[in-house]
Image (cartoon, rainbow, N blue to C red; front, side, top):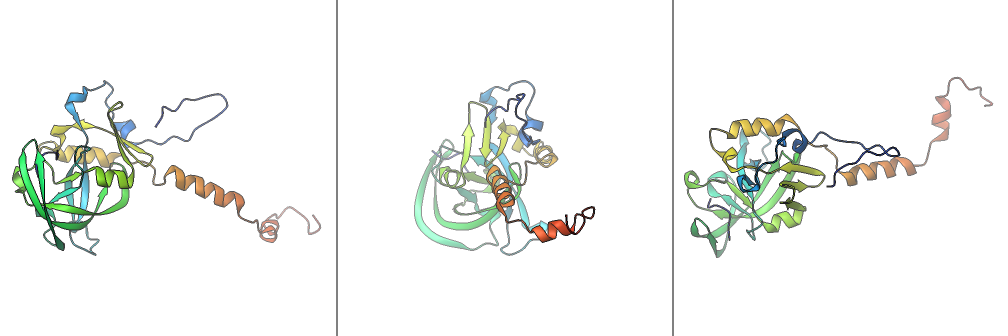
Length: 228
């Protein structure tokens, strides 16, 4: 695939304590601030390459670029040989590597484990027919999908943020064959919380306002007399 197509610091106080999570960003962020010019909004993903299958062998590793300069999301044809594609009007793309066109789309399901290990994303992507060997990325996530799922790229912090999970930008050579396995190990070394802020808040609300079963509660109080 051609190269990219043309939350707050937690402060402890005496009055409040915060529940903190060891995120991928916290564990992998370098001690010394890297030069932004050497970093890129890249990550690894896993594509369900056979519809309906949950077998590990049918989940293919993806080299992904999060590209705010690209209006739509593309996936390389080599990854979707067993998935159904649909014909689409010819769309022309202009990139730093040259020009190319697409004429089909494919509904794909994939994960982004650096952010949320088990969350699956399904999206209708343009199919790029460029030879995979000449591509640095297997998938380019464009503005359409980033807007839909609420993905932010924060150049001020050199981070990518998605729903309560922040991941540091990485050196673009992490996707090279000699480094990609190590990069994959780093991603699976730590994960963000399985629940989001909204989900945790909802759980608290549900627990707080659920009507209490007084008979059940009192029956468990073995030290109280029947009258009490």
